[in-house]
Image (cartoon, rainbow over all chains, first blue to last red):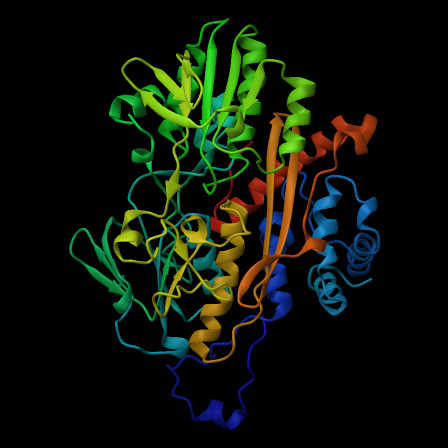
Length: 105
Length: 416
């Protein structure tokens, strides 16, 4: 979750009881991750046959998304669902999502 | 618990008042608390028990499973959670962003979000009265109605006739009637092999129709579908005699499942939020009503086509609306909404199909993105792998349900 970093001076001048966080819309990757969690469960932990995203390697996740993006026609069910969603991901969002869920190599 | 203040405080002290704790309202409430923990989020939901419509068709086959579809709202109202008020609402005052509760309480928020679901427009069917409602259980809201339909199904004699009537568009869960028909045909095939299932449809095309029809042809010789052009439009029902009359024919089935047409609930229509159209218009970047500033409408009650009236769409709209509300309250531009849908349908307990949609705002309207939309492959494209692939999608449908239950309501889906 992206949070605005307040300058130290401004922070110091706030009364203690006041909320320290200003309202800020969620980042693109946070909003995409929320979308992914609709099927893959909170924090992408997976449920039953719906695969867990959390715990896979970031590179493997990125490679899988890339593969769907490159050749959606090759994706048979149930992969066809992900081929469609991968098709509309911008390259930087694809990588950021893989990093969001994935583990470092 | 303090109701949201009427003060027009903005920023981190702001408040959002939500009507409805279905997939749209609950998803919105939790997304807001996640992304803006200091926001005061209050959800008002009817005191009645609530069972999810997704997977309620499977409860017709196994009625004891209905309990697993009940949402208990255990996670609400704790620390860091949205506040849940179980109460009936008497009126909506869009100009004040207010809800008037039946006990006289008046709640307001800096933003008012309405996600009340549907209302059955039973008077659109000639002859539909209490007797008809009892004789032809619709089961289009899950719960006791589902059990009634399941019970009536078991009373159908072998060699009998079951009739389903399906409304014209738009209505909640476009593929729902066809999934139900598939599962009823599956059950009849096993328990009443000489009983016929007849579908009388108020339209000629429907979602995933080629996939459903291919499955029916391969599996269910006991199922017959008739569209509007075949004269299947519903004319009249008679709850006393059990008669169902179409444009061209009359039927006296052993069981009738009459699914009435639908519209936005009276609460919203009385407040003028449907603009006289029956469903409520919205602008798609934040699902704000063009008829009332700072009033947003989500889920089945909204006109969000090409998005269907589905639980998945409602969940997606809840999250997109959360981001838009936070942007509005922070005084910054709304981000482009991420709006997605997948509707899984079972054509048999172990066989699923899916339709996928992705949407973007273009010229102020919601449009489908062609690259992000599609259907499960056809049987001819799959060849011999058709049962493996359909089986995998049925398993994914169940996995999806487990996930979205926890995602939307933050409680454990207890389906085994």
